[in-house]
Structure formats: C-alpha cells, structure tokens
Image (cartoon, rainbow, N blue to C red; front, side):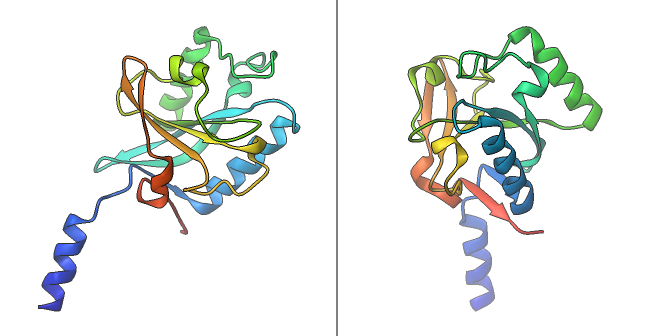
Length: 170
C-alpha cells in the first residue's frame, strides 16, 4: 500500500520546467558577476536539452562572447544579426537554447524593456533575472523566473522557486 502511495505521489508531482547541475549554475553565475564589474548588466543564453518536457541547462554562452558590443550602454542590447552564431554554437554542441539569463542592478523584476523585447520570442521560453549584479544568492526563489506566453505577455514563476527551477548535484 505504501509503495502504491509513493508511486501515485511521484506521478502527480509536478516536474520543474528547468533543471541545472549546481556546479554548472554556480560557475555560470560567478562568471556573470565577474562580467558585470559591479556596474553593468551581463547575460547568457542557457544551452541544453529538453527531456520529457523538462529543460536541462548544460552550458552558458555569454552574450558578449557572441556580440562584444551588446552592453555598450550598460544594458542588454543584443544585435539580432548575431543569432546565426548562437544557432551555429547550438548545432556544434548538439544543444538548444533552453532559457536565457541576465542580471539587474537591483531587484529581479522585469523591466519594461525585458517584457517588450524577449531574447527568444517563442511561447514557453524561460527568462531568468539575477538581482544585484549576481552579487547575492542567486538561487531559485531569489531570482526572477519568467515564462514567455507570446504577444509580449509573461507568466511570473519567481515565487515558485524550486518547483519551477531546480538545482541538482551530480
């Protein structure tokens, strides 16, 4: 009976939308923090695989490695003509973009620019925002997690923490 109860709980437990190995996450966040210099935004495409509907982050590809001028005004202004390089990187690694992440100087709420200019304008895309130039804890529940719904509309999953974005140890 207990076994059946455990099986039922497992079947009905909601899977997270996004998962990342803790080491990969910490290394990527530290690099984002370093790139901010404590005074400008930084960001990355999060590459990985989608397995049974769950997005698994495997690699950070930093915006300014693709477009060196994307932070010239202190905020993210990625040149859309550079997306071909991103897709080439995805093909090379046999990965896809599973989310994107960028930092803000203050809180993790979306700016008007974030809402109106998704990095990937595809329904279901996840955009993460790290507060305070990634200088504080950047763990699920303390970061912004936004799902693109299309037509410049978003669903805010930030308060759901690890039920939406989980960090896992290998």
